[in-house]
Length: 356
Image (cartoon, rainbow, N blue to C red; front, side, top):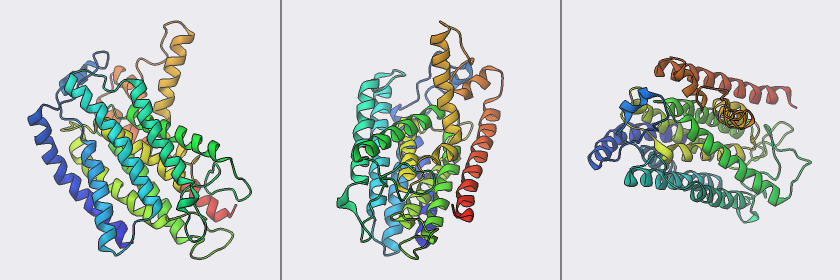
């Protein structure tokens, strides 16, 4: 528990202080955000705001985790190292995307194919290692399960390795793009991420308290390294919280694809490593809604030959186009994210109480 508190506190301080320094450095180098011409006109005033702030989130989270682990005398687990690989790997893809936007002064960075290849490579390496027997612990448990789970891994179901890896790839690609789509208003993605990663901190602590490796029983969680994953989750939660100080409206810095891809991938990673893949759809319900709004908009546009279901997608822009103030949209979407997180944690706890 000391490591969890230390990691969260350190990452919070690192981003509070580090983001202020990053704003100055990025502004001096002219690393400012480019704004879509087809978006809400109120966003044009944000042109030139420093971006790539996700670098601070990633660095603060990783540094806080390793310091907390070292200070408390623990050894990094395979699960935590895998999660960090996924977090940093997708952050690197996002960084390349952001850097190309800035250096070439265009609103599009990496070409969609190159971005897809980068996400796919990181996701497939993570998935293959997560179910690899090389990373089994003393109880012969791999970091990820060999089935698709809601709250706990089915004990009588084992899927082929290729199916599991492909599903993990799909989850990572979907989650990283979902957070990327949500990162369109000041503080929206950062605030929702605080709540969702905070939820996974609680899930990992609970799984550790009821862990089969400590006290086997019909209701225990047969996962690997839950306590160490809680340390990583706390570190990312603290980093997002500290970053939000500078990213809340009016934002002094944006996280960019560097942050949104890393955070989305980490969410999928936690779902996989805690055996709660399907539960992520509830805990991250806001991100699901945002993604669905884009899918529906594109599908409706093609089906009706040019008509639009929403004034603009993702959904937060639709409400802006209706005349809502940006801060109003953000706060109400935070409330929606909070409701989904509360519902997800409620379902998680109710399953344990019911002993299903």
